[in-house]
Image (tube, rainbow, N blue to C red; front, side):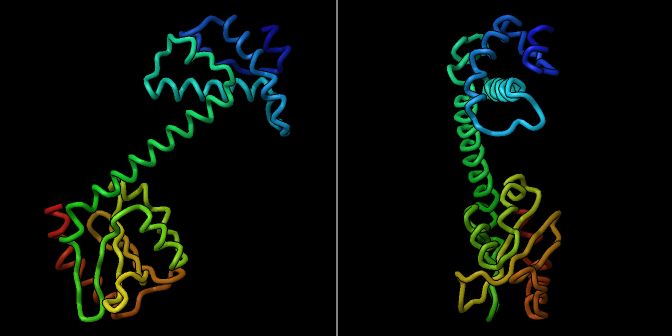
Length: 215
């Protein structure tokens, strides 16, 4: 209690006392405080020690999630908690990004060829990688680039409408959810032309159901 009052700490995450004593926790936090005092930012809503505790607790949660040895002193007490936290956070993000990219590719592996449709002027094509959605969104000035994780989680599908004469140029984007068309968007979220809408409607009736069944 005296330590809390001295450092203006309202709450201590006592769940970590399963791996260390309260004394070791306080001694370690005291050793980390100088790093947080040097961050040169305003602590408007909590004290520097509370910032240090929050970062440390977040770090331990990530270690736990990665199945690290929580009995190891090297895991529990890194020399610089702030740096260890950021490094582990970057590593986890990189792993998640790779998992998302892999899951995204898997969604279209069995779907791509079966979902394609071509008329004299238009064609439906599937993205091959996550960057395809980002490129599509940037070119057409809409938010499809933010749908990567939703596609990877199989919450929706994104396909592209292309002009046959310009197969690589973004033209219209289509979102499918629960086997139905929910959005058809051109540049800057514009509505599709009658020709495009008719073509997408044909695709949704004749091609999409079979593609989804065999994917």
